[in-house]
Length: 271
Ligand SMILES: [Zn+2]
Image (tube, rainbow, N blue to C red; front, side):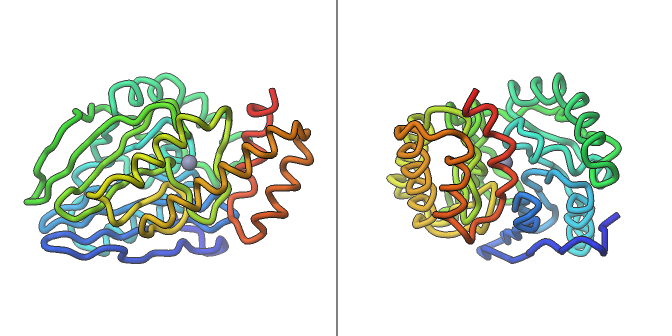
C-alpha cells in the first residue's frame, strides 16, 4: 500500500520517442532518492529497479497500473538493497531479470538483508522479496520494436552492475554509475568508477543519462558525479576522520539528498 503519510515520489516522463516513453519515479531525498524507470512500449511495460521502501514500491505499482499495460519484465541493476528490497509485495507476479552473478548474489543475500531491514524499519519494509529468476544475456534484443543493449559494468559504485542502452534513442540507463544531486555511495577507491564515468561521457551514442539516484539529465550530470568523486578523493587524501569527512560533504553539498547514504557507507570506507 502506498502510505499517504509519507512524502510522494516525483514522477516525470523523461523521454518520448517513436513507440517509447520513459517515466522516472524518484523517492524523496530523505528516502535515498532512488529511481525506478518505467519503460513504456506499445503493448507492455519494462521496469528498472525496485526501490528500498515498500510504500514506494507500491507507488510504482499504482503508476504502472494506471498506464493500462502489463509489466512483462522487471530488471535489477545491481545487488544493493535500495534497488531490490522494496517491490516484492507490490510486484509479486512479475518475472525479475538480473545479470547471472547479480541474480545469484541477491538470491543468496536478499532474504537476510530483508530480515535485517524489517527489524530496523518495520512496516516501511516489504514483507516479501521477488527474487531474480531470469538471467540477462549481454547483447541486443528487440522488444516491441525497440532495441535494448545489455552490458555488464565492473568496478564502479558496485562491483558488478547492469547497463541498459536504447541505442536508437540515445538513452543510457546506468543506475548507480551516476548520481544526480544525491550523495554518492562510496566504499573504496574511485578509480574504476571514474573510468566508467569518463567512458560514458565519451560515448557519442548517449544523450540522455538515467541515474540510480536523482533526476535524469544530459551528459552534464556525469560531470556532477565526477566532481563529487574529486571532493571525496581530496578528503580521503587529506586523511580526515569519518566525522570530518561527513561534515565536509554536507557542507559542500548542502542541497544534496541521501545524507543517510553517507552514514551507511562510512563504516565500510573508514574500516
Ligand atoms: Zn543505490
